[in-house]
Image (tube, rainbow, N blue to C red; front, side, top):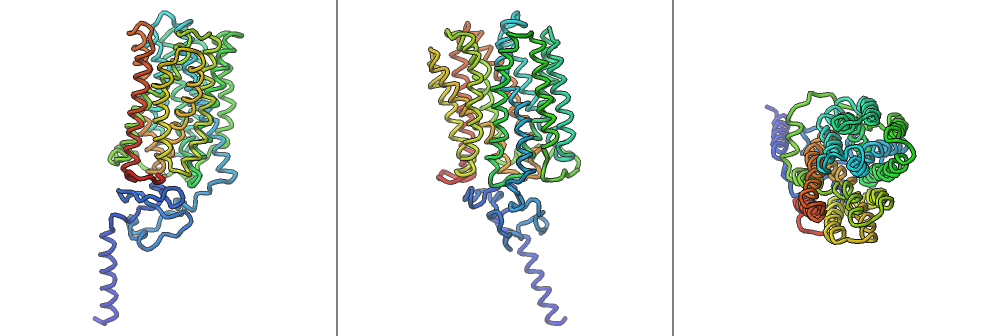
Length: 479
């Protein structure tokens, strides 16, 4: 054999051997976890999610670590994310209205909890009535894996159309409801499933347009839920006094229809859908990753407590002597401050680290419940609590999807977000009935409910801290 041929074969053999044994520190491209130098200069302890700075070409060592030795798809290169432009910000606008109509509607469930227990369903205990808003929250979140799989295969268009129809149809049917089971079917299931179909595409589409500004964009989008949580309670409180319950619900339904029409026209994904068979491993694989498991379990515990102030702050305030009219504005205060809690921590998350900000704000929410809401016996501290808790809990809503995107392949973000929220949906389902049962069992006292909420919030925060420690260790770094 000629020497040149021998050298070529030896060189090829050596290269092949090098490719078979990538070191643990070689990063997997493309957007598995955007820990780049500007945002998070941290080396993942698993070595699975390290990326170069956006705009840099992957070096030879990076290419050696690529699956099947192929270059990353150009659309998934961090430098390919536009981080702005007309389509990107129109997607944020469409997502904003989706969040307004889905999570924003869920955020006003405290108004319905109070109204149903004092008017239309007053023959039922608070814990029984609480199943209606709890089922509504559960159905919206539990649909995540299925909706995520549909999104990954077909994109957002069909989901938005179907979600708009079922959400509005469910609200219109609620306007005709008279019996408990009718509220369960119309508001708790039909409307909630429609809300789920517009909630998940909003989170997922926006994340495909942004990389360096992802947490900020997600925060702006998520602030739509806060604005909805401000407007819907005030609308319902005033309209029920001026017209009847039925027309109150119909007016809300028409408003949601108008806003979702805009969302259908503006919300798009940067990445085309990739059709592939849906297999069980798509949902199971994320739970083999320690950071994802900790974030999911933390979200589960956090959801046990997060909605309790939203559901019971009005009735608790009236119980200690606040006027019904003033108490009716507490939910608006909660959600108004939650608007800032979604945007400001999102901006700080891009600068200081998303897991860092999520952990700090989650602990802050738990401390507020135990240190301010629990001992409050007058109007002023309850109002202050409502404002501060709205800000702290708002950060959780905007930072969770940003953190999931940070530790995920962006091509699988629909399924991974859905898997997380499907788990936490069980806490959303049972948290309020447990709280209502605690109030009933202790003869109208809210102390046990408040302790339960605070402990669950702190437990969830500890899981977020553990996830952050797994990713970066006990160091003051951007994560």
